[in-house]
Image 1 (cartoon, rainbow, N blue to C red):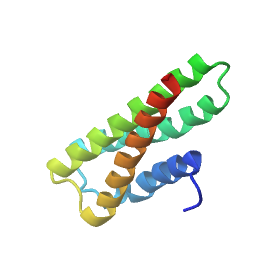
Image 2: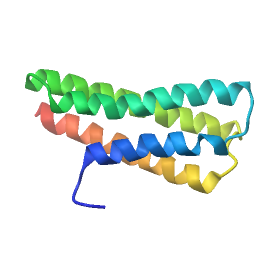
Image 3: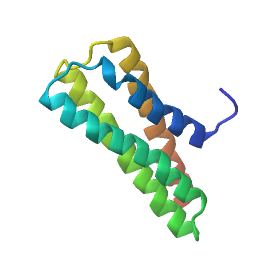
Image 4: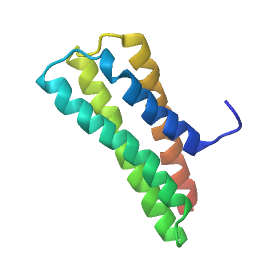
Length: 116
């Protein structure tokens, strides 16, 4: 991967979730969780775009915190899917889960640094 393009990583993370949803077992719980997962993952990417156009430092931090909140929601959702044994391809979703974890760490660190 190139230097450090957060927007690109967020877009690829969102796309990987959309492209791999079909690898989950089909039932009511999965349908409910996957709809929410798509919303939270794509929201993080979209809100990061909003943060890039922030009108002030305070606005930037607020939008970054929204991204972090959505990524944490995605992370918990992925954990639920795993614990409920709803994932058919654990390797692929393991990579998605790891990327989500890394993004959470990046955003938490960025917010902390920006607040200083």
